[in-house]
Length: 489
Image (cartoon, helix red, strand yellow):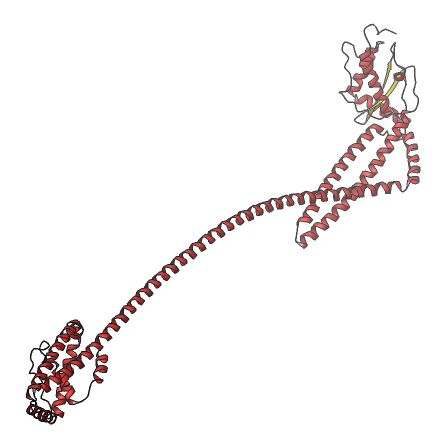
């Protein structure tokens, strides 16, 4: 405001008289109270006006007075208008009064320093000067009022703009906040969806992992079964190879074996012509006959009872005597029967086959260990042990093949001996029983009314077979005979 006032004040007349009139605005009645508070007009200009009025007064006295009165009336009317305007602009002038006073004091000091004292002027000149200053001041006040209106309008416009900007900023901030919250909510919902998807994927992955573990367990079980089957097949193949090798080796020399067999058969016929040195009796297969004596008698039942008692007792005196008398006639020692020999061969063969089966089991276990181990050193040791086991299996296979060949020869010789003819009218058995190195000869004669022909044949080719047939015939007689069938000779 001070800057605007200074710009307006610079546009006013710069003469000393005009500055004095501005200072004398407070001399108007109604503004500052009195009419006489004003500065003296310059003497030069005042003298000119006095001379002019004097000449006019002197020439036209009445007209000049009327003109002054009319001028005063018009001036009063203007003053009233100014007072009305002042009442309207009083609010604005209150702010400028202090500045105007300061400016007035400065102007007085300048005027005092620049202008000398002037002589008092006439009332008409003073009125004109006051009128001019009042008009200038009114113009200034109007300009200031217009300026204040413009300032007010600009302030209102600025205030409206500020309010509008603040409202727009608030709306934008609220919109941005809502958008930010909405974006946050969307992100949270997206994260929740991703979390649900990840949980579902994790569950699917866990189920697949469980399925894969189950499949892996099944594959391991199948692999274990396949390894066991492979080891078993390898063991069986190795066993079959060994046995087939032994069979082919035994069949590769048939002529030599046949010649040897003929020689052995001849020796067997020469050696087994004599009865067995001692007969091993199975006590469970001998029948029991009660009510007859063991002394000599013509009764068939008594003779059978005596024979059975001799078989059970094995008198060493009789056995030794028999061996002494037999050694006089036979140079060669007595040999066991073919049936006992075959039983022994069968027993030994079964033992060898059991050992061979155990070796096959060990072979399978070694193959499993070789497949499971990862250490090269341990695998080499196991392979060497497997080779040694295969060598032992081959040796055992050779033994089994040899025993099977011997067993086959025994069965063939037994079949040939069964085909030889025997006596048909009676049964006369000679038994050679050995008890502790001695022999006993037992002669048994059995007769019956209705005896089958096949039981009456004498089987003198094989002593062991003859003894067995005697026992079987005695059992059949015991079951078939009745009380009326027995008779004295």
